[in-house]
Structure formats: C-alpha cells, structure tokens
Length: 112
Length: 115
Image 1 (cartoon, helix red, strand yellow):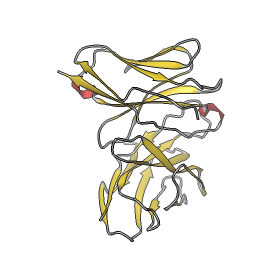
Image 2 (tube, rainbow over the protein chains, first blue to last red):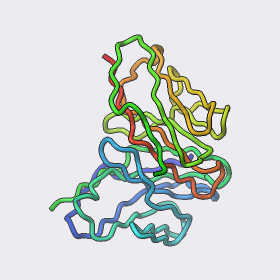
Image 3 (cartoon, chains in turn orange, purple):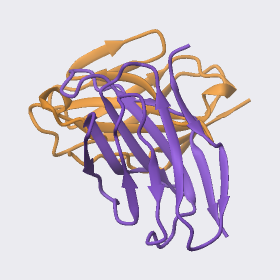
C-alpha cells in the first residue's frame, strides 16, 4: 500500500472553498486515490475516489495531476459541519486488494 | 434501512476478561473489516474477511480473534492477551472483493474501556 502524507491540521472560514492536499510519491500504476471524512466518535465516510485528472460529485472535487504523486480534495463553500478529519488513501483495489491504510489524516476546522 | 450496526456503543470490562464486540450488516456485502482507533490516530486494521468462513489478519491482530459464520455477522473478541485494549473499535463492510470502487461502509463504533 502506497504511503500518503497529509498536513496535520488546517483552519478555514465558513463559506470559503477548502483545498486539502495529500502527497503519495510512491503511487503505483494500478493505484486509485480515495478520500474519507470522519466526525468525532463516528466511523469514516467515503467522499470520493479517482485515478487521474478531475473527479467531481455532489460533495467534493478531486484533482490529480499528471504525475499522480499528489492529490487535492476541494470542498466548496464549507460550513461548520464540515469540521472533521479527512483521510487520503491509496491502493490498487481493482485487483483484489481491498485493504485500506488510514494515516492520521488532516484535521480541518471551519471557523465562523 | 440498510447499514451496519455495532453494539454496544460503550463497553466497560475488567482487565483480564475477554469481551466480544458485535457487528451486523444487511447490505449484502461480502467483505467485512475490524479497525481500532486510538485518540488522535488513524484507523488500524485488526482483521478482515472477504467471504464467509474465511478471514485474514490485519496489521495488529495479536490479542484479537474473529469468526465469520454468516455473511451478515463478523464478531470481534478482544482477549486478555491484548495488552492495551482500551480503544474505539470500528466495523466496516464493502462489496465483492476486487470491485473497482472499494467503498467501505462503517458502523457507529464501540468504545471499549478496560478498567
């Protein structure tokens, strides 16, 4: 499983767009990038997954540059309820390896 | 409603006692997982099962045991051999192993405190 590196924490003001970065320098050809969100005392929740370029859903966008050594999760117009820990994970789940490796994640605090 | 249930939400046990945490899912998922989370840390994989009657050790399996006799159920036993069992335990499930989108669905968790 490729290792990921994220900032420990970041603050953002309510209503702003938040960009959360993740570094995965040793990502393999078959690896996908997935992001989860976790609120205190709850289980993580899947946000988005991508392989390259840009993926968008109703919650977030995921930007992946051509070299795929990093990725950025973008949350549009955050609210106080977006305060959570965000995990970036990398793995080749398409080939039967369905293990997820969670790092410490990035604590995002939304300020009024 | 489809989902994953874990019970109880809070559990207290005396040191030296075995304790079993319940995990049930009605999502018809083949794969199930157990994670442990300590304060300020990420999740660490204890055991996982890709199909009924089969399971594999994760990264921190020592002191834990599991069974997978039914597709819907994946109980975790924390034995007295686990040196530091106090933690937040999370159960998850996902669709058929090897699916492109390995989205895992998590239960609400059980907070175990060993006194």
